View 1 (cartoon, rainbow, N blue to C red):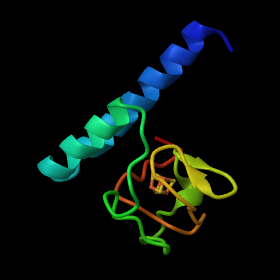
View 2 (view 1 turned 45 degrees about the vertical axis):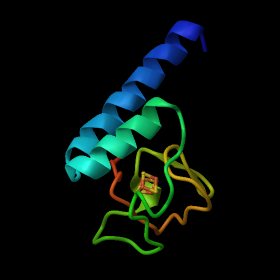
View 3 (view 1 turned 30 degrees about the vertical axis):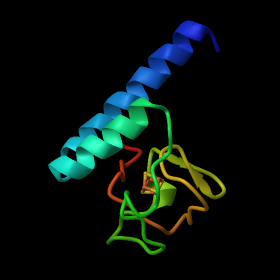
View 4 (view 1 turned 120 degrees about the vertical axis):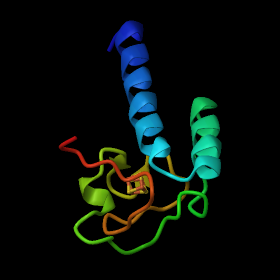
Length: 92
Ligand code: SF4
């Protein structure tokens, strides 16, 4: 992958996160966006991560999930059956 492609992918990921963050409360969104801009993962607490699905939404079908148990944007062990406020469906 070229550096240009890496930049485009990074910008695309940031744009997707920003769109998701805008759907959250203003204070949380600002914090999440600031941390993402700094290329840091947010804490599970800040993302309101839970180890169980929310309806049909869960990490395994989230764009940000990195099998087997990590996330692009949330720190720590992430269950495929977990969920957080940054959930972004793969089909989006
Ligand atoms: S739902 Fe949240 S913790 Fe799970 S993969 Fe998506 S962004 Fe990461």
